[in-house]
Length: 435
Image 1 (cartoon, rainbow, N blue to C red):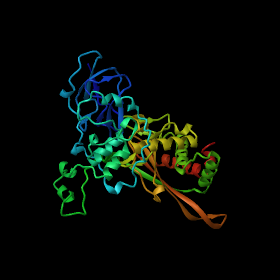
Image 2: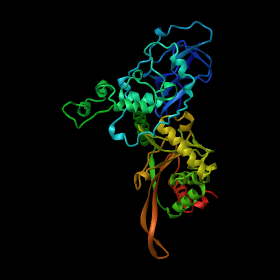
Image 3: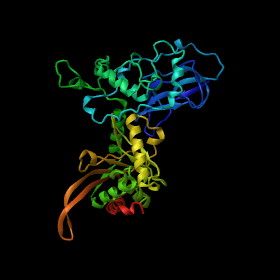
Image 4: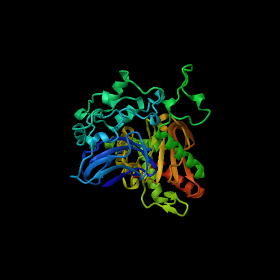
């Protein structure tokens, strides 16, 4: 017998929620088969089998939470006696109210990119096996994103017909069901335990149509806790710098003309400049621990991406060794995966520095919270049209504000200032970025 333990799928993960079992008791399991989808604090991830056999027992049902290292299932050697599926915990088709996901209408604008029709997820070969000999009432195959959206809206997947490959339920099917008025879980806020005596003041009330209380999902709970810890434990200090972005925009236009149809963004150039500056200033590419100051020999830049439930930070690894076009291509791919909830553990772990850009939302400047265990994060604002003085003349100019948040335990003000000065020099002379 081999126990399957709840894995650590991200460097900030402390527990996981069983999103969906891809195998059921009695199903054969081959090495590499996806056994279960696990929801972490950042995304829904697929867990693959490392050992062949037969899934003998499920210990943690769908919708339930388990700590890292806790047993969630048992695999028996192939050829042994198979258990009766009916004796095992059945997959619940309705979502657990306490784990109901947050889906307010106000967050509809940054919704995930439309799910691609082919959706070639690794579970494609395992899905048909689930449909054969499965217990009655089990759900049809579906994508992790579809299952998450179904939980958000309290939709029973067993009532839907999938339009994806092999009848797989995809995001479009859930959205169609919502538009058609599929039954939704009623009063999820009432089912969640009140966090404090004052909670009734913000709960849904029939006599107050202007208030809606939506339970915090795990993503936001963990993000809130991590960011609070970051602000409380890491003594932040902030350095601001105004950058002349005229040459940066001109350089970007030249690159896009030469690379057409491929495109690079201002943020791609910022990431490359940051990586170059970190390579030259390794004292900023560090992490603080109680016993050591860790100097990272490689430069892995996290790029903040807005998703439906908040923010994730996929990692561009070895960004200092990649061209701007490579960074642009990789960033777009990672952002797409982030919005579809398909980032792997490796794609979200191991960052040594982060970049958060809100310029596309018209934000002139802001201060970002450090993403532990990193020691710094750069906040990038919008490129603004402002007057500039050149050769004694007032002419139209382009300006961009950048703000560096730094953990004072890991580095000092002078060191951070030298890094920021070099970064500004690279951004204002972008040919140095690719030199």
